[in-house]
Image (cartoon, rainbow, N blue to C red):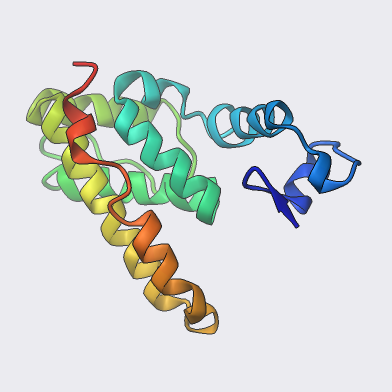
Length: 161
């Protein structure tokens, strides 16, 4: 069961005990903010780049925030030129000061817009690879690719600059 994109398991984890059809948009929004923005520490990334934040949150809702955080960290390491441009980070799925500092380093090296575009492209690539690996769930692959890959318009990278 799902309502407003919240599964029954996630709703129960947040203390919701009612029927899923009665979960309000406000309750769902609180769950999204808590589980998919605050808990994985995406708040500062959102403030640095709303588009990258959108990609992190969207992917986190779909595949889990640990996986989306690892994709972000892997993208950062792939763009650092072996740690020459900014320090590589440990790919542990936890967004902390090291990851945030490295993203700021990428922004400084490539500019805010280009840093955003590059990270989103590499996260999309990793997400697509992940979907292709899910052979037991292949019925969902076309929909996931259609709706989750390229779903953050790169033009958003130039907004809020």
